[in-house]
Image 1 (cartoon, rainbow, N blue to C red):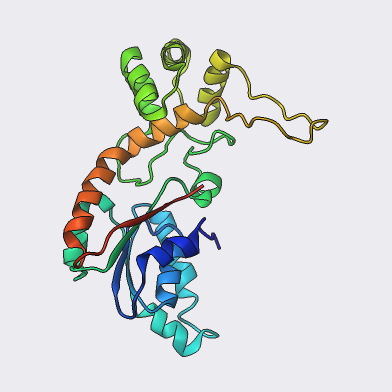
Image 2 (image 1 turned 60 degrees about the horizontal axis):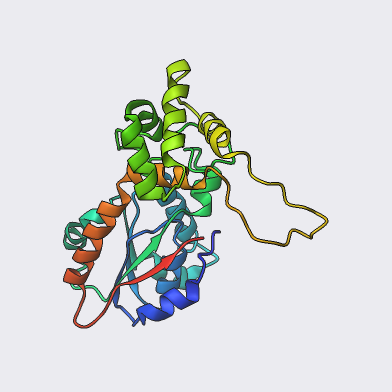
Length: 259
C-alpha cells in the first residue's frame, strides 16, 4: 500500500476527534483517510481518478472483513467514497450530509501509483499514450494540446504552468515535429524536448552520485501539460474557497504535498 509522505504530520494538524466529519478531497489510495478512520473520525473520500478510487475501495474494504473483525466493520461504516472533482466540494458535502465538517485535507500533486501504473503518460520515463487525464470523462488529452495549440499558445502554457525557460524553443520544435507525425506517446515528446535541451546527464559512479541534483529536461513540460489538461489551478482555487465555507467554526483546511 502507498504510504503518503508526512502522513502523521498532516493528520496531526487535522486534530481528529471521535465522530468528527473530515473530507479527504484527494483520496488517492486512501492513506490519509485510513489514518483519520483509525483515530475515530468519519471520512468523505473524494477522488476524481476512477482507477485510484477503486484501488482505495479495495484497500480499505479489505479491513472490513476478517481478520479485521469488529474493528474493521466499524472502519467500513465510517467512510463514504465519491467519484467527483473537488472543484464541486460544497455540492459534494451537501449531497452526503458533511456540512459542517471538521476538516478538509488536500494532498496535491501526483501519486506514485499514477506515475508508475496508470498508463496515462504522466511519467516521461515510460512509453505510454500522451493522455494525462486524471478523469477519463474529460475530452481533451495532452496529445490534443500538443497537436492542436498554436506555437504561441504552447509557449504560454509551458511558461505559465511549468516555468520552462526554453518554452519558446520547445514550442517551436513541437510545431515542426507534428507536421511530420502527430504526437501520440510520451517518447514522441521526450525526443523533441531532448532535441532542444539535450539528454539528462548521467550520474557519475566515481563521485558516488553526489553533487547538484538536476531534473530531467522534460519535467517542466510534462508538469505544464498535466496541469492544463486537468485544469488544476482553477479547480484548486474553487475548492479552497468552498472549503472555508463548509468548515465548522474556527477550523482550518490542511494540506500535504505528495513527492
